[in-house]
Image 1 (cartoon, rainbow, N blue to C red):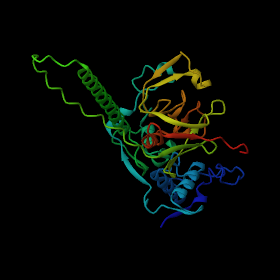
Image 2: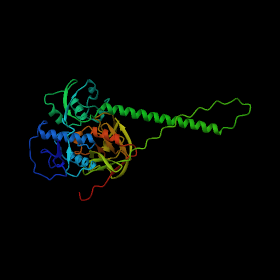
Image 3: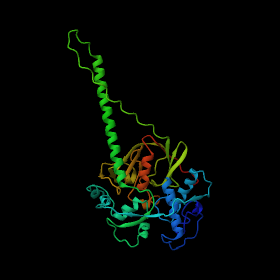
Image 4: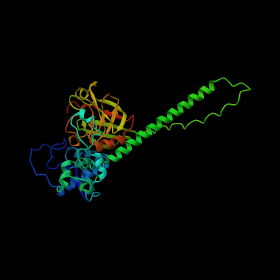
Length: 374
């Protein structure tokens, strides 16, 4: 059975970055190739974590602080003592093949650098198929190219070696967005029909009785179906640990998932307190407002950017009851946890999509204070 000690989750190129590791002098060691035993084993560990919902960040076969933090939470959720081994025996081969399809080109499109130019595009798509495949397999772009040294420019029919994770499919995002939109439209139509029927019924009930010789009135129309009540959501909450740059999801007091994130900035931090989810929109249009980004204050000088994976908010906007603050995807997954955002909680698109399926309107979002001694 292939296993790996949790404390070994940071390899030479990243050792000492995480809070759990002792600081060591900087060394410039060569990066092991993708088929080196230690790189293969680390990729297995990252795949186990990714599949379980304790996301390690971009898969690169190198580990590091977010792999360590995901492993800690995976062990906690599974009742494993600290320092226990992660069983990777279910991942005999960490890599598999993916053949690029003609349909994949639908998610690749022209790019623009300024918001004014982006506003004119039909969608904010991937720049190329390298970027498309890297996100589809939760993968570091450099690692993907290491896995495929003989490929210069992928095209339909190209076979690429990729990490064996559950695919992040833009097709699924599009289908779910359409389904949610149609369900909301049907719900509103049912509510409207029932309100109109109830108003007509009350009006008829208040009308004076007909004269004895009056012709019989028409049989009242049967009531429309009562709108189905919204199902009771799971008892979940989201907790943002700003110092660790981790977003946790709890259900009935149990930790069920975690994601690395970029939690605001020193200038525009995510506000502390207990908030709640007020919206959960897939493939959103994004109102780009320089004033909001710099100071959190809304202005009238803004651009309405079309949806797509390369939107500044990625493929989902999960709003909370705080103006201009939410949890969302990003066009820069390699910078998650290593850059700053404008008061929001930023995640890789593949992680943001999973999170959007774990939370509903009303889900609490806790942002505790960072302890003063840290």
